[in-house]
Image 1 (cartoon, rainbow, N blue to C red):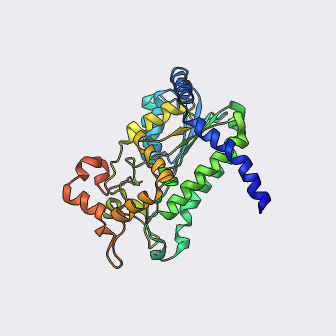
Image 2 (cartoon, rainbow, N blue to C red):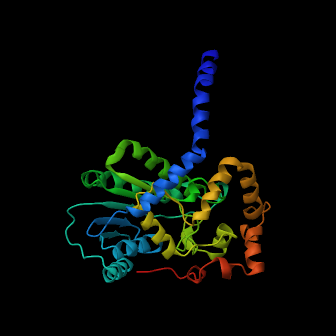
Image 3 (tube, helix red, strand yellow):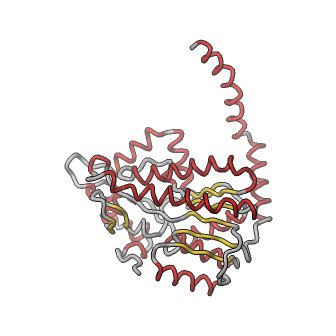
Length: 328
């Protein structure tokens, strides 16, 4: 044990030094200078091949439109064929060439996702939530495994739609949060394994206009449903960003080769809340999200504030205020 303490005392000062170095003004200026260079020398994706999963709606759909405007060749994947055909047609109108044969791959956008809303102790059968990991994590892992050789060959890039849920412990979302944390750590590890051959952009959105913020999720009974009252409980008093601006920011920063993207940008502050004052963050969640034993979650303080003040009309886009989602 003494030997371990001696070792820790030896390595701690260098780690402390490098941590402080990150906040040193000249180092911050150097990072700012690099960001300016990146904004000037952006990647031209015209004619390049981009695969996007979960492209029939939400962020995936609008990322497809942003790549289409830049002339990229798109390969779109989703489970709803009719909706996907509509997205493909719109992408062609915006400038994406029609692709018949896939001979190369330059960008892989891992985007497909599913959410669950349930307290662990209220879940009727925990195995009902396997789909969360199957889609949110294993779907990304399989796509990346098969795409990696092609991406190495083209010096390509993987765009990973994780979530701010990977660090935020929002109640009733433990399965979803865990899946997004797994995704983030998986691709952080792949940065090292792939080295400079394949770039990785890790995207961690906050609340974005999509079917998830429309209230589509797996309930505690294990059924996929749309429940806008529970959506109000989970989104609470947070503003929902328009999907078009989110997708545009993502593709712009992907083309600049950035490693991390958080949209909306102000949502990054939640990472520092979690890092430096987790007790305060946990207290806020309990105050706004948790109800007394036996009370409905729809009695949560945050939902009451949204309902009483009418803040939903300002904080939530009109498109997510209807329970009608896309159907084939």
